[in-house]
Amino acid sequence: MKIVSIVGARPQFVKCAPVSREVRKVHEEVLVHTGQHYDYLLSEVFFRDLGIPAPDYHLEIGSGSHGVQTGRMLAAIEEVIAKEEPEIVLVYGDTNSTLAGALAAAKMHVPVAHVEAGLRSFDRRMPEEVNRVLTDHCSDLLFCPTGTAVANLAAEGVTAGVHLTGDVMVDALRENLPLAKERSTALADLGLSPKAYFLATVHRASNTDDPAALRAIMEAFSRLDIPVIFPVHPRTQKKLAGYGITPAANVRVVEPLPYFDMLTLLSGARAVLTDSGGVQKEAYILEVPCVTLRENTEWVETLEDGWNVLVGADADRIVAEADAAGGARRGHSARFGDGHAAARIAAIITEYEP
Ligand code: UD1
Image (tube, rainbow, N blue to C red; front, side):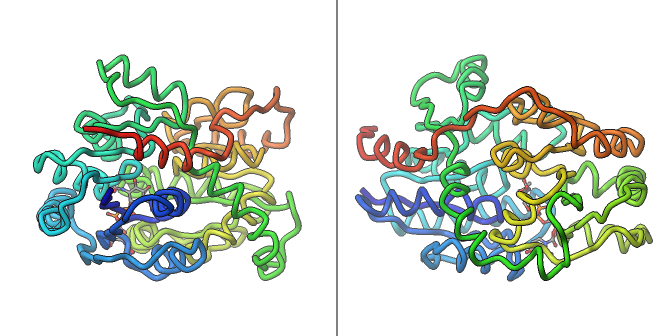
């Protein structure tokens, strides 16, 4: 079978690495990089570290408003599909690259397979939520990481082609954590001792595009009494400069981290403060407390047992929950699967008959 896989943004590179490897054991995969993320540290370094094959097509779409970015991708992906004539188009997660890939394929009557289907934050103001809903509703194969995702789809009347596979990020994490421990020198490079620092990431539009929210988050970081390691996303970097916000002395702003350094710093952190979806989940799997800088989450399982807490962009709540992060949790379980999601996905694709 010929499969066209579409990736474009950092979290998708992590997700596609294990799936691509399994799929290529049996099928021909044509890998398309939309170019949504183009900076070396957001893109190339992930291909290198995760051993992802070089893309067959690099569409070089780059940044733009949602309409411009998604529209350009749609036109360019359509051309690739017309040329390659795949039997399946595989998309990942919830970015504009996901939606563009799914929409281009569906309009050309090519079956769409969606990895990380069924996630819902129930907040339609998030661009990712719109991407999730629309992608799921034009997908033929829906690979759900959790039972919650299966139930979310059923509530929208989507039951055909739905499979509970577990989460491919568990596959990626299990495989790469030992490598990260072996290869990453991030803790020593930054002079950090385990559990004596917080790790923070902020890039969600609701936080970066609202000066009051970003200011409150940075103020909260400044009130924490241990270092806050803050690998800053280019979007956030630009906004901080634009709003004239200077991080306090205990906030150590560093470049976006390669995957191995991220896993190392995350697993050693006292807690992570983040608005990322993937990081909330990685924190849960690594048993690191998470303080989520949002009012909702699509990863509701992380809230159970007290591993994650939603605090929005409220400085007092952020500080209180970060300070409480050493507290006892109520247990931990394999809520995101057994680390064999990619093999299951490849097997389902192999058996698929449109
Ligand atoms: C995108 C995804 C988000 C995901 C995130 C991971 C959408 C709607 N959002 O958000 O779900 O969690 O990726 O990082 O698809 N930029 C650079 N260099 C780059 C890429 C982007 O400087 O390599 C800048 C752009 O100029 C732009 C901003 O970052 O100003 C936003 O980039 P964009 O890809 O649109 O969205 P993300 O915020 O990265």
